[in-house]
Amino acid sequence: MGDNRENSEDSRYWGFVPRDLVIGRAMFVYWSYDESASSSTASFPLNLISDFINNTRWSRTGTMVK
Image (cartoon, rainbow, N blue to C red; front, side):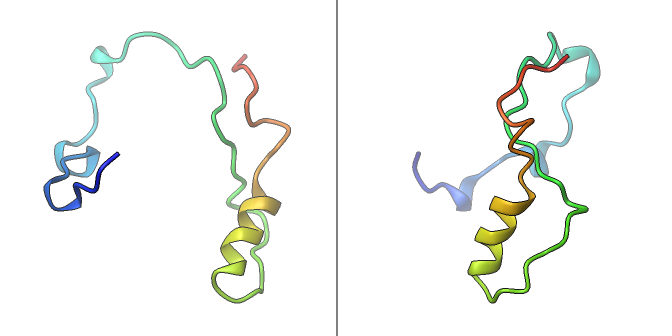
């Protein structure tokens, strides 16, 4: 991947995909994060690393969607 930040047109530019254009169903949980979990009191950047490790729902990550 290259750095194209000056010429990027992601979903913030073009908006949501219309529902009728979405085909298929989700199969896997790519990553599951609990935003309601407590945050680390460590200083930056250790707080980001700590929150990622502690607040990721490891038991759900990588599982099949029911």
